[in-house]
Image 1 (cartoon, rainbow, N blue to C red):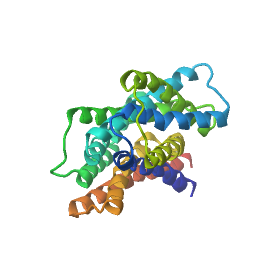
Image 2: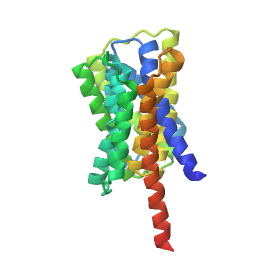
Image 3: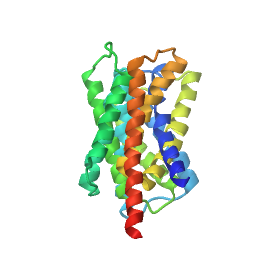
Image 4: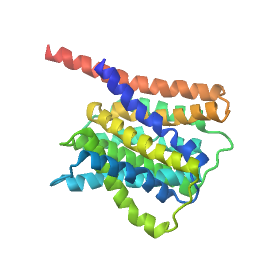
Length: 292
């Protein structure tokens, strides 16, 4: 049961992130992606930091800013750029290369072996996302494509380094450090590139509150909890739940249809997650047998 709870809570984070594209395109003012990213992460980080009442020390100052730079500054900035410049389906598909990048970085930084099962799970999920969200009408903007791929690489690097550098503090404190560091790093670029503050209506204020408190603070706390308990190759395919959620929201809220290709994509995504977790269960059983 503890293992199932860990998996469920870790999968819940990307499922929440899947609402980002819909919320951004429907409720937030356009033309200020860096400002949107800063407003999403910095308030949540400061609130958690006030609650934690603890600052990093020693080498953790450098590590927190590196992790905050990958997980939040770079990732959130390019995420909003991709959301503004690409259809959600295209952006989600490009971002789905993240599990494959995680497998490669984990091999380089954590000495984790690259297995056929991990590669197969990543490719199956990537194919499933493509079936799920790509259409012949999908527009391809070069800057949006570059932003989506950069975001996938940044999130992959942050995932592996978070596993490598186990924090010496409680989870919410660790989340507060990263959120705040990521927002602080982003502020100079906001001031330089987007000096005019966007105008929010009532729906936009509620939407930004949701993206900040739920989509950033709560979801990232669950994600970091999962990283500390689950191997990178097993947790990375959970990222496929983000486009999965995006498509479900389109079906439920926007009246979009799910055809045979989309249903096949759903099966491939669920299959890729199952493959990755089968590897985890097999490894656990072999370890128990070796000990006995």
